[in-house]
Length: 386
Ligand SMILES: Cc1cc2nc3c(=O)[nH]c(=O)nc-3n(C[C@H](O)[C@H](O)[C@H](O)COP(=O)(O)OP(=O)(O)OC[C@H]3O[C@@H](n4cnc5c(N)ncnc54)[C@H](O)[C@@H]3O)c2cc1C
Image 1: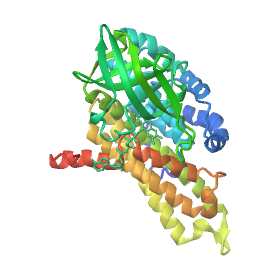
Image 2: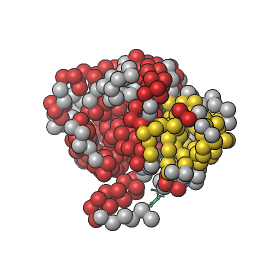
Image 3: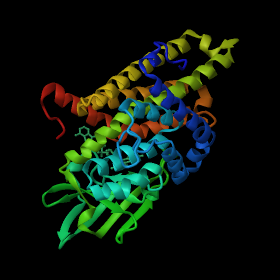
């Protein structure tokens, strides 16, 4: 139970869910919190080391079954994302991209041989994966992607480039989406294949405790078995995004909770005009509104998680969760920032780091506007994308 759990939403979780949450919270307290401000400032994170630690706890591909994956429920996975992101959105991104994007794509669309080759080492964190959909000229509109896959005898040749790819500079394998004659196809591409080059993208002002890269593919020759046989058409990468967005619905609440808890502690101890900041009505109004939004966001996440566990979660429902929870988490982070005054912009406190991180979270995995359009289309039956 945390101070922001006014409604005792904890009572909606079962013992196993609460236990998984405590284990992840402890890991974040021990391994992330003491170092994350430094990682963020340096723009460097020990991704491989963290991946192995997360793998040991079963957090990588946690909601998948077989091949060394933990086979947990969607709700338990969501709670893990929440705790990880209470540490840092970049750290949660490492886990999301590994499990919900790269591993999920191979687990759902790969051949038996691809699953046996990649999933067990990815589950332990020995191998790191990334997911290449976005291109320099094609972000929200992946259907227009320029990366091409063409057959050459039994082989495939991949040509093009991907940008803004989380984990790419430390990854062993990339799931690359490319347009072939018959439509969009997915490939498991070892990043040491000839013709692949990866460049780290530095100078991000957000998600600095996450490594991001650009992948250039210069007529990369791949054997026929690099193709993910089950992935045909854009709906395959979009289904992976639905998985990952569900984790974000929960994760964003973690960043918001950390901001709120930090702010409650600060506002009750800092005095101005002879009384604690928390004693001013204007501060309490802010705190009350933020706590109410947080609780609503948690109920939404839990509802979507339960739908996912019942096998009934639809993509536009995930859009409702991603749109609301990231938007509200960002609003909470910014509001908390005001309560900390100048200290709100200091790296000594986590608030500005969370707020900056949430700017990326608002944009990746479908921008807010794209989720509004998904919801709008569902409401009206009209496609307003183009
Ligand atoms: C830190 C970080 C990590 C990332 N990691 C990955 C990753 O691992 N793999 C990956 O493939 N991608 C990744 N991305 C890329 C991310 O998914 C894209 O940035 C996102 O899809 C938006 O694309 P864009 O940046 O090209 O913006 P654009 O598509 O150019 O959009 C710019 C603005 O225009 C708006 N817009 C676009 N189209 C419409 C429309 N039809 N109607 C109304 N408004 C519209 C958008 O909402 C946005 O506000 C990452 C991005 C960041 C910042």
